[in-house]
Image 1 (cartoon, one colour):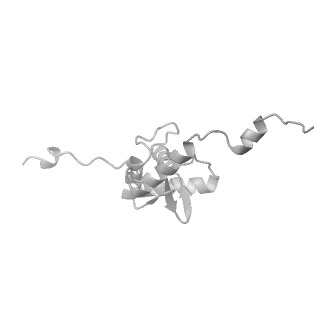
Image 2 (cartoon, rainbow, N blue to C red; image 1 turned 180 degrees about the horizontal axis):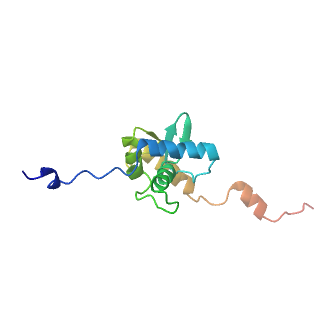
Length: 135
């Protein structure tokens, strides 16, 4: 009888396990490590907020016992998907506006209005004009 399991590829081992990420989080807390801040997303764990990619990279380095090893995924959705699959909560730091949404267009209009040059302000005009002494 032939071994059928050899004919089918086995799923790849996950990049990280939940325990490896928890180990990294404990290390961060115990040593008071300063991680580079995230720009858009945060990993929420026990009331604290962590930069997802930095946590994933630390867990990856600890798992492979290589302090120089680079996390193979980009920040954002690729890293978040790995952490969410391990039952970690990822949240946006601020609302993310979809391009073309009503809020996005309103915000874009405000920014355009702020960037319009309308000439010097009355205060600037007064400061630039020479003072004339009265006779």
